[in-house]
Every structure is written in structure tokens, then in C-alpha cells.
Image (cartoon, rainbow, N blue to C red):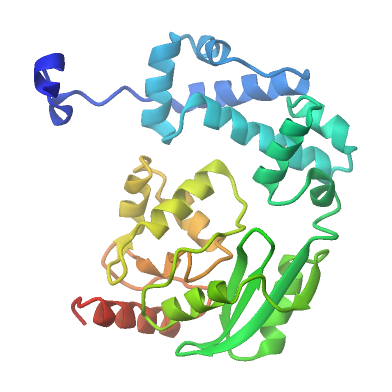
Length: 295
């Protein structure tokens, strides 16, 4: 049916043209200028900024960075909102400066993107409650931290004091206390640390649109398998963004549940892992064995 309607099967169609790097910079500058003036650019104005019809612009943008115009704009807005809040702007001023209105609906959008209310983010996370606990695992001590929204950190180590210090450094103004929102969230992390399949649990993990795409791609890698950084970049539709994909892996706070350990070097060599190369090696081996893969 598709071949009859289009004349070409999907694999036969030429890939959409991509947007040049200079045009991407011009596009970002246009968005930033409109937001700085208190406006919100339309898709048509974004396309016009680099001299393309709206439909062609949408296709090229998705082919180039893997997201559409609205997702791009939302990402830039959230970046502006973060910058203004951390600079000390009042919440209302920051919302307007980022192109939001003053309605409660838009305020809630800011909360969803930041993982907390804009006011709390402005205070560096002050007042946000994070519960944490440590449990033993085959890979050593496991620290799991949660908010009301989901798991916000999973660390591996050898002693509780060091892990707690790392959590405090990551969330310096949050209120930390023992105890987690849900025990099954902890059990999911322990399962992965044992090489088993963990339940799909909610995560409270904030990042840029690019980081979020990388983290989603990591979660799609089957247990017992690995991907290279080049393959990971291809998975998100940006085959040349290998280093950026590697950086997104390095900024992942929720180890195991976002399995950055399943990414290896170009020759299948084990590359850097925050919690040590031996843990990464053992984890990959346990997952292969438990999933029936090759040792």
C-alpha cells in the first residue's frame, strides 16, 4: 500500500537534507533574541530565519537533530528559564523572559521540565525533599535516592559516607533524609546491579533535550547487549555527535536504571565508568549470562 501511494518504499526514499551548522547557529540566535524580547517564535518564523518553507524546515530539523521545531523551542525556553532563575530573577520575571505567560498551566510546565517548581529551582533546589538509602549488591554498596516524582540518583561505591557525600554535592540545597518514596524503586536498581531485569520505574532526571534523548536511547539497549558510542549517536539520529553522546552518558545521575554501562568503545573495549572499570566489566558479564548471551 505504501509503495503504491508514494512510488517508493521507505528504504528507497532519499534521506531528507540536513541543516548546516551555520544555519543551526543562526536559528538558535533567532530563538534567543525573540525570547529576550519577551516573545515566543512561531514555527513559520523559525523556518524563515534560515530561509526555508515550514514543512521543509520541519523535515530537515528532525533529520539533523532528531527533534521537531516545538521540542527545540521548548528546550531553549527551559534553558532560558533555568538561566534566569539561577541568576536570581523573580519567578514571574523569569517566566516572561523565557517566553511563558503567567498562567498556572505554564507554571506547571516549568515544574515538569525542571523536576521541581520554578521557585525551588531558583533557590538551587532548596526545600526539595530527597530520600535515600543504601543496600548491598553484587557490585558493592548501592545508594538510591528518590523524590516524590521518581528516582533521582543511583550511585555505586564501597562505603556509605562517601556515597552520601556525593549525593550532598550533587544536591547541595535539597533536604536529604533516610527513607525512599517507594521500596520497589530500590528493588529495581538492586535487580539491575545483580544482572537481572529491573522493573520500569519513574525517574526524576533533568537534562537538556539532547541528554534526554540519549538517556532514552540507553534505556532501549537490551539487557545482555552493548552498543558503541557511535551506535548510540546513530540511535538518536545524530551519527556525528559521538562525543556529545558520550558526555550525556557521563552526566547520567541514575546509574543502572539508565544503563550507561552498556556503551563501550569502538573496538568493544571498556571505556570510562564513574564507578570503576571492574564494576562495568562484571555488570556486563552478569547481564550477558542472565539473559542467555555469550559470556
